[in-house]
Image (cartoon, rainbow, N blue to C red; front, side):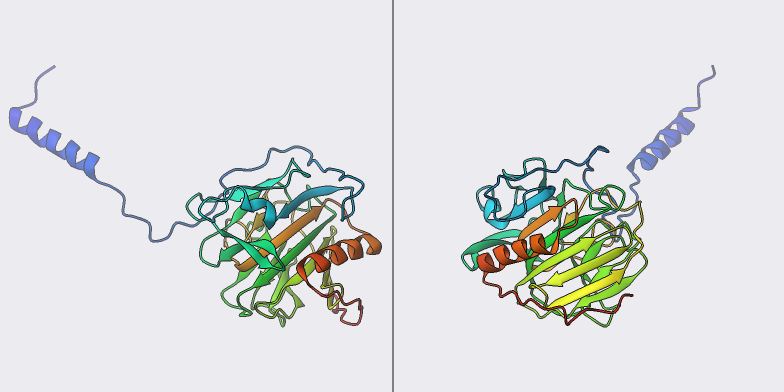
Length: 291
């Protein structure tokens, strides 16, 4: 093979060096389009609680109490969140450098996990999508620092951009606290900032029913859930597509892989109401018109 002239060889080497040194321009935004990990495609494991448990024993998929997150917190920030009574399920930060706070003695002597509304989300190991959990109940003790409808903020969700199951603040409804229905946004109730709520969100394949503080607001909403939602439930946001970060506190969250009877629902409400100092109002007068 003939050798290249020395001048040409020098130019070729310089050109290659320039190509190797060229870097792509930095992206202006880095959307969180994928979760850090996903749960294996297997049957979700529920547990049956001990007989003396303060809540209904069967079908529990997740039970997280902020009091349980205090021990594992580092620098007052969430590292991991788990309840030994439900060992198969847990929650942890989506990004290790964006951790919500754990604040002790925040509501009636109990801790809360506090989200600052900027970039903090926790990912659970459970799936609340309609394929894996066609029937289910999500129970939360929460409060928001704001009642503003915009920017959007979600308490929890598994939305991949298709209005999959999620609840929180949104301006696309007559009420500020809303539900994703699988095809849009529907009003749930009128949230007041810095107020503690006990919410019971009941899902079936084609409907949603919700109770707040034992019946202060009751919503029954038609829903059409997609089967291609995110495979994990996120806390402090709707998921990893639009985020919609929550600003406020979550003291406790319980997920059943089934619907509860009225008696079971009231048992949970009464337990949480007494624990967190929230008065339960038994009423069915605020039933929303199905949408």
